[in-house]
Amino acid sequence: MRRRRFSWRTLQPLIDRAAFHNEDFRQRAIEKYENRANPIMLGVKFVFFSDCFLFRVPTSFQGRIYSMVSEIKLPLLKQGFLLRGGIPQTTRPRIM
Image (cartoon, rainbow, N blue to C red):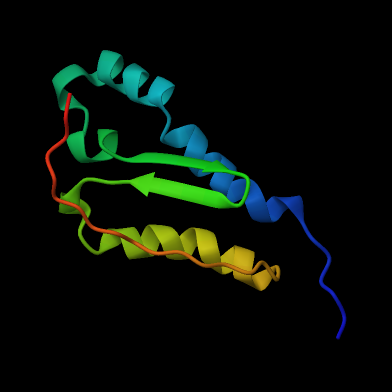
């Protein structure tokens, strides 16, 4: 069996998503759009490191989390990455 050659472009969707859903972006959106900023979009947090990526999304996202995960995992699977994970659901209140 021939090994596939790794392409760093495979990681670009992770890099782009992390750049879009970071705290600096959220703060700029709040400053620019004030009360017109989409609260659901502002509630999305994403980070990746080592062999892990994490989402935090509002419960109002419902099934869209599966689409978000699929966008990221399919290119990784095509490149031969082995993946595992889960999507826990919590409705506990945030503590500020």
